[in-house]
Length: 176
Image 1 (cartoon, rainbow, N blue to C red):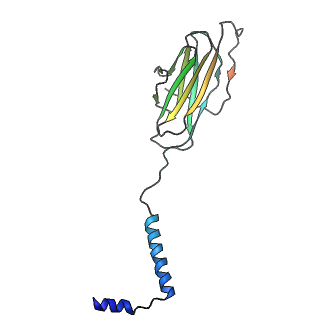
Image 2 (image 1 turned 120 degrees about the vertical axis):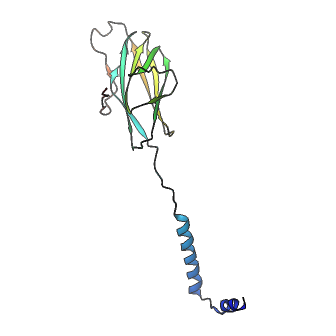
Image 3 (image 1 turned 90 degrees about the vertical axis):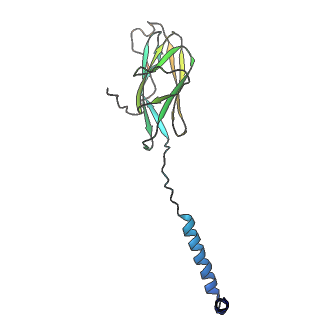
């Protein structure tokens, strides 16, 4: 033990070796703490929803088809989307094209990023409802209010209903 202490005591500490030691120690600590085994994989991407134009007038018993396409900014294979709606004016039925009837304010899992909804009016008054689409990562949901004005059967003089909303982008048709 005495020889080790004698050898340590015999080492001269210069300014260069003192700072060199601290620089080397700092570099080792920095290198060890800056490395991480965790791989950052982005799972949640913002998304938009394109809606094809639709008629703005509806009569009791008439059905209007709404076409949607979800467009995420990135692609993560485990992303799931849900849809729900809240009707606050008028009475009607909203259902997916495959027949699943949506219940007011209940979430339903969407099986595809491209889908269609059918809204059937049960009254001749004005109809308003909000559609909300969310992903399973809790990113900002997409919301849009749909409004249909009630009309009698001969309001438009036999013309087709007016189109509201611009074509935002192409929609891929569902092939069955």
